[in-house]
Structures are given as C-alpha cells and as structure tokens.
Image (cartoon, rainbow, N blue to C red; front, side):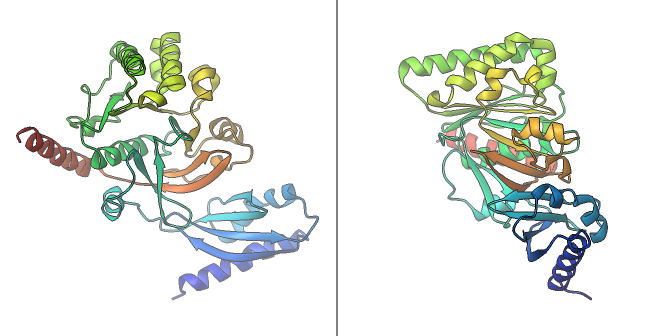
Length: 344
C-alpha cells in the first residue's frame, strides 16, 4: 500500500508532466498536508507567464484524478492545492482544549495551511469587524456557530456578551440559552432592527462614558434576508456600528452569500476589514467576496473550506466544526457554570 510520501511524489511528478507537455519548465516541491488538501509549491523558469500556468488548472486536476485544484501566486511562487480523497474534520472542542490560554477576544477559526490552529482576535486594530461570505453549502453557518461557541467557552458573561440575529430561524437554534446572550435569539426582522438600534445606543453610551467593556459581538446570519425587510434602516444602523463600534468594544460579524454593494451597503463593506470566504459560484463572485483578483475562492471545496483575507493577505483554512448535540451540551455546561457563579 503506498505511503503518503509515495502519493506526494507521484502527484508532484504528474503536475510536472502537465507543465512539460505545454513546454513550461518547472519544478514541484512537495507538499504540505492539511486536513482538507495537499499543497505543492511550484517554481518555473524565468520568463514564464503566470497566466499560462494558471490556465492549466483543469488539466492538472484531470491528471491527478480529482474534481478540481486551486492554483495561485504567493510570495514569488505558484501554489497548487489538490483535495484529499478523505478530508479530515477539525473539531472545535479538541482545538479549544489544546489552547486554553489563548488571548482574550480571540476566536478559533480552524486550522491553517500548515495544520496549526488559526485564530482571529476581535480586539486587534486590524480586525474589529468580520464578513463571512460563501454560497449555499460552503459552511458559513457552521463556521458562525463555531465562532460563537469559541468565544463563549473562553469568556464569561461578565467579560463578553453577544446578540444573535437569525432571519431564517435555522442557524443559531442550538445556541439558545447561552448565558452570554443579551436577549433570546432574534428571528423577527422588526425585532432585529430594534435590537440594532439599541446596540447603537449602547455604543454611544459607552462612548460618552469612555467604556469599552464588556466586549459585545453582534452576529448576523444571512444579512440579505434582513436587508430585504429592513432596507436602508439596517444599512444605516450597521454602518454606525462598524464605523465607531471598535472603540466602544462593540464588534459586528455578518454573513451573506454574496457581499454585493446592493446588499452590504458601501459604508458597511468598507468597515469590514477581515473576510472569511468559502466556496462561491464564479470568479466574479470570488473577486466580490474577497476583494482580491484571482483568489481562487470559486475553486474551494465547500463544507468548511475557507479563505481568511486580511491586510491584502490570504490564508486557506479548514473551519472548525462542532455538531448540534455537542453545542447543546456545551451550552448546558456554561449555564450551570454561570448559575454556580451567581450563587456564590
């Protein structure tokens, strides 16, 4: 039975064969193995045009016997990412247990291209607010649930609070009863607009009082559905929160299938510096979602295969997963812990 090393060598040879058939002198340096894919680094001879190499993605995929590959340039090299036949699952609770001393305000996203835990820290000046984008099946809602539970497991209600808006009434249900919730999960659009208005009032109160604690995070699943009902009111409230929220300890995380300006609004889009982008339908959608040309987001594998885009850099990662049963069990434990704390 071939070992992983044998498979890597064989696939590297096959990639070189495709390039050689098109008279592209190149060398493949073998690969980093992640739960979801294998990444190879490719170097070409001087003068080889990048477009000529990237145009061979479909031929490389056919030669490797996989559904698709992602090829992109980074730091002077071309990378080829091929999906594994049996993707691994990144379990949020296991990653959490291995990182109990992670920084305050940090969220576990999953594991990066090297298989190391990937975090994003809300309190960082480079983060503040986050956009999650991707088509149906990309894993947006699963990622949002993992992000919320990641924060809840690290922060007590006195340190971190959250507001969950779920217009489709099917994303955040397992998190009902979370002790950090400022109110029950909101599914009614009119109630959502009122909650956003109250969040703006809270932000302004904190500004006047020079306060920024406890941290407060607003999670919105399927922003487009909320915008259909709330229209300009939603856009204006979110623009206020994303423009001024960070200094008051208020952070916004929104998810949408396609972050077009008609859905997001220009001010909101400009104030979401970090993007978590899953699989999208086309290169055009990929550019809109990531804000970067040739990101390859249209070639992601779905089911938690994401790109982290921040400060002009991209990191591919496999999103952490936690099942609904485990979420509910974790919520019960957090409730018991909060009740015990109040009883002291």
